[in-house]
Image 1 (spheres, rainbow, N blue to C red):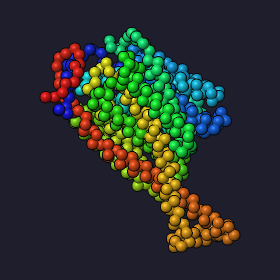
Image 2: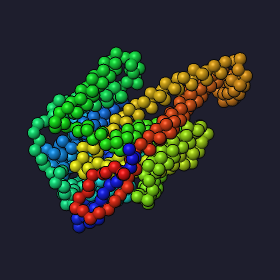
Image 3: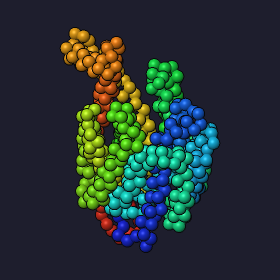
Image 4: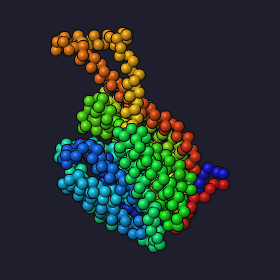
Length: 532
C-alpha cells in the first residue's frame, strides 16, 4: 500500500479573505494560551494574599486545567448543540468575565470558582480556533496558516512567565487576569464580525445527550490531575490513596473509551483515530507537550535554586526561546509546500534533542549566554516540529471532522504537559537522591581530595570567624555543595532523557502519509485518495 495521499484542492474559493478570520481567532487564542502559563509565577503572591498554603494555591492551576480538559474534547458536541460560532462567542465571553472575577477575587474560594469558569470558557477556544484556521485555508496553504497560528500556541506560553513576573512585581497579581478583559471584548467583536459557520458547523439537532461519557471524562481527568499534583509528596504508588486513585483513573478511562466507541452520538468521536496521520500526530503531540511544559517547569527552578537567579532574571534568561520560536515560524512558512513536511519535523525533532543535550552539559560556572543559546535553539526546534505536525496531522481529514479532531489533539498536549511536568519533578527529586548516595562516598577522611578541600575551608573560616567552629562549618559547607552538585546532576539527567526520548520517537515520523496536492476547479475539497 502506498504511503502517500493525494489531496485534491480547489482552484477557486469564496471571495472572503481568510486572513480576516485568522486575525479574529489569533487574538483570542493568544490571550487564552498566555493565561495558561502567566499565573504560575504569581502563585506565592496569591497564596500570601489569602493566607493560603502552597498546596492550596496550586488549586488555582489545577481547577483551570481540569475544567479546560473536560471541555477541550467535548468541543465538537457543544458546537453541534449551539452552533460553532455561537459556542466560540459564549466561550470567549465566559473567559473574559471569569478573568474579571479572578482579578477581583477577595478569597481563595472565589478565585478557584472563577478559575473553573475561566477553564470552561478557555477550553473550546483552542480547538475551534485551530479548526477555523484549517478550514479557511486550502490544504496547500495550511502550512503558512499554521505558522501564523503557531505564534500564539508556541510564543505565548514562553513569554507568559516573564510577563507574569513583571506584572506581579510592578503592579499586583490581580492584573495578570484583568488585562484579559479589554482583549476579550475586542476578540468578541472580531469573532462576531469576521467568523462565519460553514454548513456542517451550524447548529444541529442532538438526539441524545451522552451523560455517561461526560461523567467518565470528568472523573478520569479530575482524579488524574489530583494524582499528578499530590503524588510526589505522597511517595506515588507507595501510598494507598494513589493506588486506589490510579485504579479509578484506569477504570473510568477505559469505560470512557468503550462508551464513546459504541454510542451513536458520542460526546467525543474517537473514530477519528482511524486516520493514520491523525493518530501518529496525536501521539507525537502528546510527547512534545510533555517536553515543552517539562522544560519550561524545570529551567526556572534550575536557575533560581542552583544559579541564584531572581525570578525576573530567570525569566529574561528563558525569554530568548521566543525569538527562536519566531525564527522557526518564519522557516516553516518559507518551507511550506516546498519541502516534504516529514523531513521538516524530523530535523525539528533532532534539533530539539540537540538543545536538550546542550542543557544536559551545563554546570554551575556557566554564564547567561550558556542558557540563552540552547533556549534559542530549543524555541526554533519547537516551531519546526509543531507547525508541520499540526498541518500533516489534519490534512487527510475532512473539514467536518476538524472541530472534533482538534479537540482530541489539544487534549493530548494538555495531558502530556501535565504528566510531563509531574514526572520531571519526581525525576529531579529521585535522581538527586541517587547521585547524593554515590557522591557521599567521597566525603570521607580517607579521600585525599575531600581532606584537602575541608582543610582549605577550615583555614578560610578560621581567618574570618575564629577556630572554634571552623571544623563544623567546613563540613556543613561541603555537604551543602554535595547537595547542590547532586541536584545539578539530576537536572542534567532529565534533559538527557528528553533528548533520548525524542531521538527514539523520530522514526515514527516516516509512518505519516506523504501528502501531494492536486488542483482542480471545484467548489469543494474532496477527501484524500491513496496514490496509485
